[in-house]
Image 1: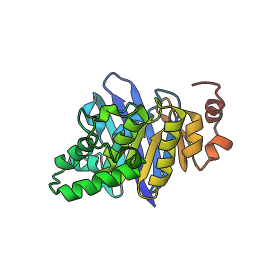
Image 2: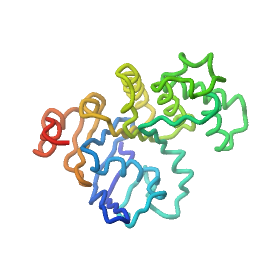
Image 3: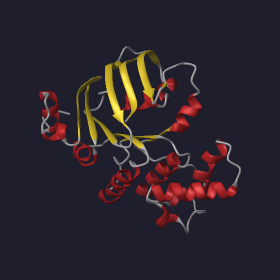
Amino acid sequence: MIKIRIEHLNLQYSDGKESLRDINLEIPANAIMVLFGPAGGGKSSLLRVFNRLNDLADVKLVSGRVLIDDLDILDPKIDVIALRRRVGMVFARPVVLPMSIRSNLAYSLELAGEKSEKKMNEAIERSLIQSALWDEVKDRLDEPAISLSGGQQQRLCLARSLVLKPEVILLDEPTSGLDPISTGKVELTLQELKSTYTIVLVPHSVQQAARVADFSAFFLQGELIEKGSGKELFINPKDKRTEDYIMGRFG
């Protein structure tokens, strides 16, 4: 089943830099889709398209279609707030709110209109379990979130995106600043989450891409060069540019 369908997507910023050119890609549900390639290839721009964060940037042109299920999310009439509840995002640098661990999660629920303390507590526990953080913080929920380690803060940001039960999770180099143990915990968590969510990940390295990908797509200078399933692109790339990047000849 396809969760996201991208058809002839073009994105150009007002400074004349064309970030994406004629992108066509299908992203299956309940899988990890990895977007990889050198910096400036358009990967992060594509992530921001999926929940309309590019609305906040200086964009000159967006054309084509991006469908989540049957909803064209580029339609100017759609409810962007509702879209962002369906499509959560976790950035490279964990940014926790200056409040307790519990309040970091309750805040999103309150904004969404949840008033039942029982339902809030259930959602907070669920999201912390899903992000593999519950056992580490269940007795510390009223402590400041800033007291957590970097890896724990990143998993709290993941829990914050999960607390509203999105359908899609976007992750932009979520382990780039983490140590190997924390990175391993996040990667293991993603493998468990994909049974419930569709995950689109921009990894911080080719090695991470190869470890976690169910499907992958290689981007270079705003173009989708090659796509494949499983480890196909990393073992047997068809395009020489893909092979050169994977082998470390550039990037």
